[in-house]
Length: 271
Ligand code: SF4
Ligand code: SF4
Image 1 (cartoon, rainbow, N blue to C red):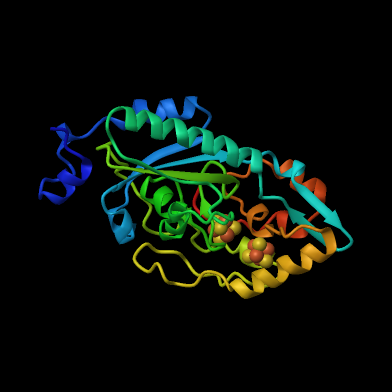
Image 2 (cartoon, rainbow, N blue to C red):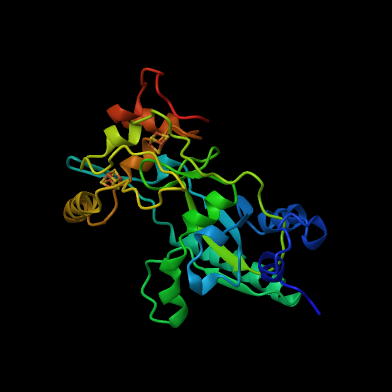
């Protein structure tokens, strides 16, 4: 009889029983060949709501956003960065479906958490999505940490990616290097860049998941203001300001946005 990852986890056998685990490297390579920019597998037992306990491995995947210079909207005094990319979300969903079919073809369970969990969906499954954030999957898979701006920060692309998750009971070998602490250190660029003063400057830690990083009301107020001026509820100065993995500074310097320039070189985040 086939045994699931949950059997290994909960029957008292060690997760580190190498013989029980599928080498995840070729699997993740295959996921990238389907179009994911980043992919990883993480043990998410600690971050799972009760409803998901039977599928303790998260496959976290992301697709990078286009260059920042192609995503700037400006009108009057408002400059905003588009971080909503429906075409990327569709590609992520397509890859997620392929992953789920692949795993199910071997008899494993697979549960898709779609990229845009805010979308209107009244299905029972959609009600479960908020119980499992993509941040949990990505940090457990060792792909990034939660920055002071409350977003996933990866060494390669900063916060400029869209994320999806597939939960499974396939005993994939999980990342041995999950992120449990912030890599932001004393960097404060997003804090300084936020026009609403909404970012508190706190460091994320897995051990203190309820530590508030953002003043959500201030952020929402800024988005509302932008919506009135430029017709879109977007802002994302906190994404553009992040120096991590920033290969697009050529675009930023052209925009002459003051917080994007220079810095004193002190107190920067780890890269
Ligand atoms: S989206 Fe804008 S207002 Fe909200 S936290 Fe980021 S920079 Fe601040
Ligand atoms: S700008 Fe600095 S503090 Fe903010 S998320 Fe990026 S690295 Fe962290």
